[in-house]
Image (tube, rainbow, N blue to C red; front, side, top):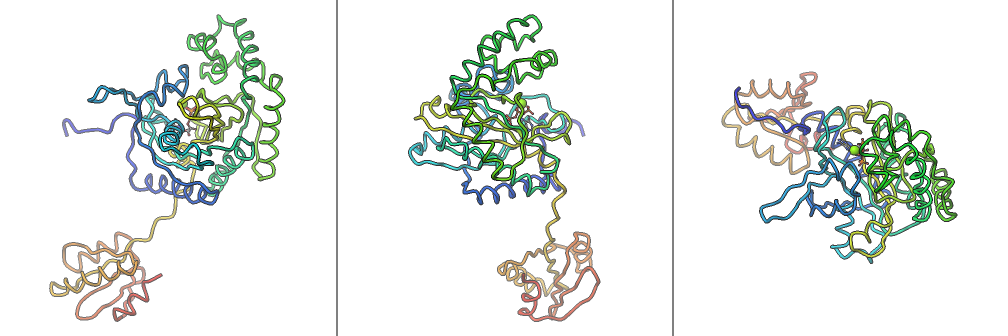
Length: 407
Ligand code: ATP
Ligand code: MG
């Protein structure tokens, strides 16, 4: 067909098994996080651009290249949210909740980044995520990570995934470390990518997260943060590791994890897999103690993670198909009204049922068979329950029908 409309590049429809996988991930996360005491929030999918530009860091990939920003009809600069944390913190402040702590937030929904689409990378993608606002103890970090680990276990993907953790230290640790990085990278400045030359001036830590192959070679020999940690920061990191061990969450230390956004301190972590090619990070997060204050609120520490639902959906086994509704079939024109009554009654008893809408009884039965329904209720002068798997039939009263189909 000429001029047929197409989905926008980097977006996808959730239909059939794709939808089943997606919602299985969301429902599993919702159930597990409730066990950990989290409540679900939903914040708007667009925000004042400054919610992101002021917080994610002016040298982060998301802010420099990936944001979907536009001016609305009133001249306001609006951005489709590229991630979930900034919006939750904005809501904490504007909702007057900064004195009602802790807040334990679960969210699920679409995020938007202008990236080059490929397997596991889209322009509209979806995340589940957690934010734990208030406590600044490593137990909180371990609890949030442990909830993520439990979700991956329940999804049956834990065996394919490895948890990498790191510390970014506190402010004084980072100042020490920053100086060491500037010294090291300045000595190799000519070999740095253009992006990283800029990062060297603005935020040298960000170079460690560069995807440029040349940068990566330099990064391999760059100094590690561990020698630059203050005693407080080292203690925090040790507390995280011992609590993870107590919770039975296996982890690897990885000094190269710095995370792509500027607002992190202390804990940074990623759950990674080899099963998805280049798009290996499935769940990622860290501690962001300065973020709420940076957004104009009081000092409220926080820790959280976000996980790509598309990447998780690709890792899980296909969820079991839901049972098809019972087909209610009028055997002739006169039985139609009675069939509708029975349809209504079954649904009122929480029994999934549908009616074929049109066609002869024979046609409707054929369609019911094709749909994979287990039973048909044949409504004529009497009521028959037909087992569509083996073709057997039994005469039933309305009461016994409900009994047979219920629970
Ligand atoms: P990557 O290094 O893959 O670009 P990121 O560091 O940008 O990831 P985060 O901002 O930490 O990712 O987002 C958390 C998670 O969201 C990622 O681990 C990934 O599972 C998912 N994610 C991020 N960007 C996309 C995208 N464009 N399409 C699909 N999933 C994504
Ligand atoms: Mg990215």
